[in-house]
Amino acid sequence: MIGIFKTNIATPEAKSTVLDAIQNSFEITACNVDIEDCDRVLRIVDLKVPESTVIHFVRDIGYDCDVLE
View (cartoon, rainbow, N blue to C red):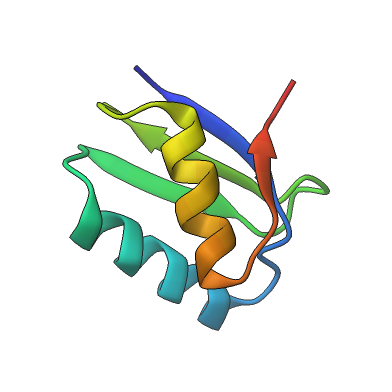
């Protein structure tokens, strides 16, 4: 499954922090944050956990995160 989320991750440093945490905590193929997009889209490839798990994880790190609709 591919997870696509709206976030408030706005800087390269924040992007690196979140992506490193996700890659170290979940079994995924790839992930990225588009900090140039107005929705700061977080995309996770081969997500094997519920989207709600990722949302809570990112929020626990200190960033907003919701499923992009």
